[in-house]
Image 1 (cartoon, rainbow, N blue to C red):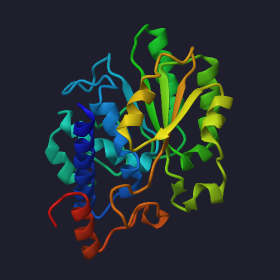
Image 2 (tube, rainbow, N blue to C red; image 1 turned 180 degrees about the horizontal axis):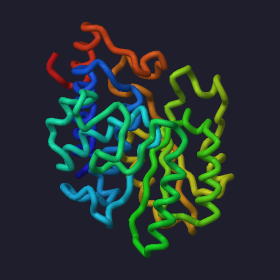
Image 3 (cartoon, helix red, strand yellow; image 1 turned 120 degrees about the vertical axis):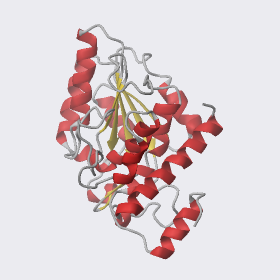
Image 4 (cartoon, one colour; image 1 turned 45 degrees about the vertical axis):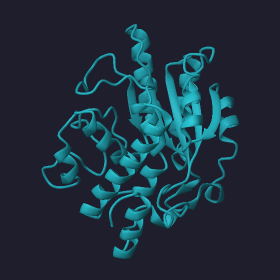
Length: 272
């Protein structure tokens, strides 16, 4: 896909996610919207090796959404890849449905369970080590929340990955500077994330996480890091695409009013 196609696909994903949440009045829209372009770049931009209809392809790249409250960002994509029927999207969080609020291994295409924060880099390092030991060339991508980076297990795993020179491991930090309690830099300052990851032995780059013009070249660094794992710090906006949700922590899991629903649909390019 070219840049225009990727941007159109990002609109599609935001629309699908919005309708999923509105049907059930459950979900975390802003957390998904801040990483929308990241996910589209991975799955549709020719970055990750994923084959439609083949969720168990042993040569596939592994994609882990470590910020578990945004697990549903993968659901429309995996359905679009024919990993399961699209009708499952309409049964999101329903008893007997496949797709829950948090991902699990019953869902084709899900590589890691992440309701508890802080475990994605450790899981990813395990996949990366397995690929090396099995002489496989698949890569592992881990999408982290910046608030999630308060977890010590992130940094333990980061040290391990650097020590083992796992250059087939890529962490993408969704740097929207918000978590459920407020602004990350006021709650517990994370500071210069690029420098922080570099200090743990990773190659690191900071980009605009909503710009495909910056996302795509960042992924071109994979395999060119001199044996280091790669951290991409993606500056993003929580709730990107719906003006009244953008950059506001109170919308973490809040539901809009009927009037706000109409406004959101209009801003997302949908019928009222």
